Image (cartoon, rainbow, N blue to C red):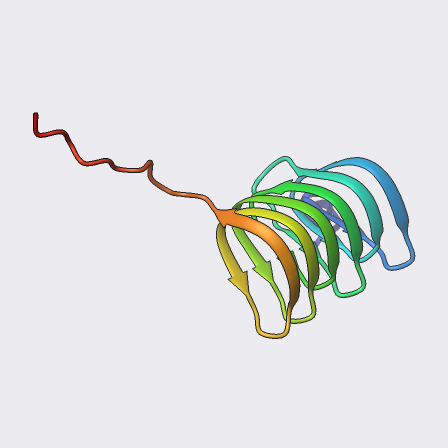
Length: 125
């Protein structure tokens, strides 16, 4: 890969020894392996991944989210939320699709989003 090709890549990585607090907006693939408190808004369809050492508290608004680490708060994933076996999640979840792997520690209130509006039977009056 050339330097120019690398500069055109769209991703974010926050490392293990970082602590961040506030409101964050990301584009592209985003990997968090840090402690973060606040809100995360993914501004495109890039996947947000919370790695094994991550400890996140707050709100997440994203298309696809994959959790290997610890999360407390609310997640709104319009696409797929994958909760891996090493994950610890507590809070509220709303997702288009939900995948929970055996071994995950979860305590949440949640729902999946409907792809189609509800269909009610037509009246026969």
